[in-house]
Length: 116
Length: 115
Image (cartoon, rainbow over all chains, first blue to last red; front, top):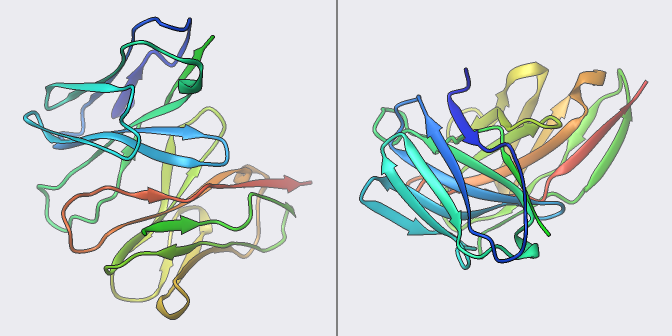
């Protein structure tokens, strides 16, 4: 089983609908991230969380919200989806508490969202 | 501004040929540098990372990268490419001494391998 699991893997929805992408991890890491991947733009950070009570905006947080329900769970919501939110979304984790921290991220397999 | 540039959007090489993927960064602090690979339908897998010490780092799958501070570069190399190396490759930079853990990614380079 994957250490970082994203659901759903694929979703097609319509403009204006509320969508939630979920991420859970079994790595025991404290930090979790949501990135968005668009062709030619690489990955851009939407939100990140250092622990359950510490959530921060990334560079492209407008139109998104997040919830850190537990150390192992981090959800991304689109309150009212629009077509330009069509993208591949990645959840990632990192372990700051361990020794030798390097900022390495561990990724889920991605959630492909299409907004019509 | 902090940024990562991968000048080559798409590269095609023949199987068995050598490979070099370029990565240039702009970062105020001492950076940590990473190369990730994304196979179709998969998440990103770490190939290698540099944060201190020897500027030539070895990674998985026979890849290596060299950190050149004077050129703000961290190019990825492989002496002999295999068909299974066809994928998208991302260079990323993160804060070396800060604790934010946020990575900045380049635009990605898609590698196609010809038989």
